[in-house]
Image 1: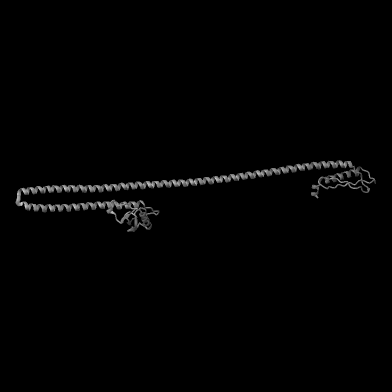
Image 2 (image 1 turned 45 degrees about the vertical axis):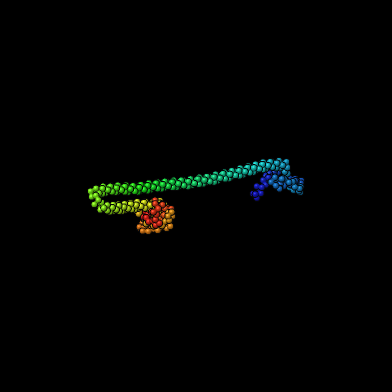
Length: 341
């Protein structure tokens, strides 16, 4: 019933007004037997239309002022119209509010989208910065590695220069030894010539003193003495030359072996931790051009483990071709030396 009142307020007002008019008629009106117009109110729609029905049989009732009813109904209709307009205005305001809220929601969604986009852009920028930082670190590591490589190359070059100076010094010493030997030979030659001169003088004196009697014997003795002296001098000279040559060759051989050992040491590489006391005897077989035919590791001490021995063999092959001997006579197909990097 309450829902009906809400939907049809005009009908309710008309009913109330009708009851008021009836009450007034009961108080002030007169009763008669004339037919009267029976009025009923029927609400067919929210507009509250009024319908006049047929004339009914006269009954005892009171007279109603139709003009007053119409006036009251008109007022009610005006009030309802005002309420309707107010409801329409309220509806428009509600719809406007809905549109405003929708626009606000749309704006909030747009702001949210922009915020998320900004977050994504910030994240992308952060990732780009991190990537740039990573690349910069890689470049820094590469530069450090290059600097380390250059420093190592410089160190090796300086070491090679020192070894070359040492080798040159040994060659100079060998030259000095040869020069000393030559000087000694010349001195011995001078002594020999002096001795020969002395012999000649003696012979001349003997010849002058003994004349013919002693001539044959003196000549024979002189010849024998000269022959013996020549043989002695020749033997001593040959012995001296052989000793000098052997000494020179031994010095050159030691220099040759040292240059091979230094070359192998320069090519020593290992990732393992190696004791400074580790050493082995390396036996190398080579060709005349210094190419490696074979490598054997012999006589290792307790500090030279298996990894040390393997890396030593690799160092020999990296040193290929091996340094050439200063003279061809010093070439040895099989070389042995103590390796202690």
